[in-house]
Each structure stands twice: as C-alpha cells, then as structure tokens.
Amino acid sequence: MNINHLSITWAVSRGRDTYGYNICRLDDRNNGKRYRTNGGGYDMIGTVFGDWLADNYQDRLKHITPHSIWDSENKKSVNCESVPNRSYGCTHYIDGKGYFLKAVLDGACGINSMIKLAEDIGLEVQWESNRKRQTIGFYVSEREEVTA
Image (tube, rainbow, N blue to C red):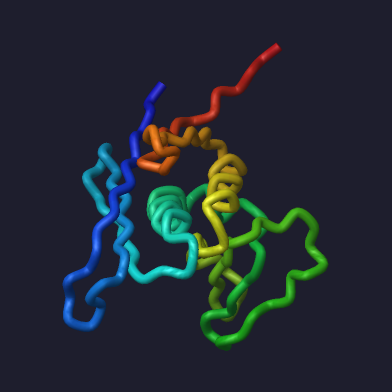
C-alpha cells in the first residue's frame, strides 16, 4: 500500500503588497510539489488540500456529482439544484457542448468537505497533529476494498 505524506507549514509574508499575511503551504513528499495560499478569513488548510486533490485526481473528480457546473464558453452557471447527493465545494467546468474540461475544488468551504470529496473518490485521509492539536499534515492512501 502506497501512503502519501502531506505536510502543512505556516509562515508570514514579507512581500510588499502582502506584508503580514499568513501563508499556508502543503508539501507533497511523493512528487515534491508545493501548494500555497495566503491571507486569512477562510479555511486555508482546506484550500491547499483542495488544490492538491484537484491537481492529482482530475480523472476521478470528473465522475462525482458536482455542487455546481460552470459553462466556460457561455460564461454562466448551469442549474444542478435538483440533482441529489451533490459534492459541496466541487465545480465542474464544461465547454459549450457540455463536455467536461476540469474539476475545480473550493477548499475555502472547509477541510471536512475536501476530505469527504477525497473519500468519495476512493482515498483514505488521516490527520496528523502535534501536541497542541494543530494540524501538521495528512496521510493519504487508497482505500482498501473489503471483500467478504
């Protein structure tokens, strides 16, 4: 079983236009990529986790029922209010003919929504925290199917 460790680190921006903003970073140790967001007032851990999930699992995300659909060609939202079991925080972008382009995850809606999306596509996510109960990372693996 392949377990991917994602580590969360925090910093404070020293940039001219963003001086003093919080920076949240997620490092994927398997491929060396870093996902980051800055600012505050929203779920920053959910945002970087959602960015990681969307970057690595587009092929699986296109098969789940999205919370919303955006028509990229006509620049308008497609109504999917009547569809049950929609995945909160997931938007599917389609072209003018209705073909799937990409899935975008809004991690600012919460880390719990992003973990639920990960579980919906067959992943198992375990939190890693320090002694102060602060999130310092995640362990992500493929969910094992139990056969009886």
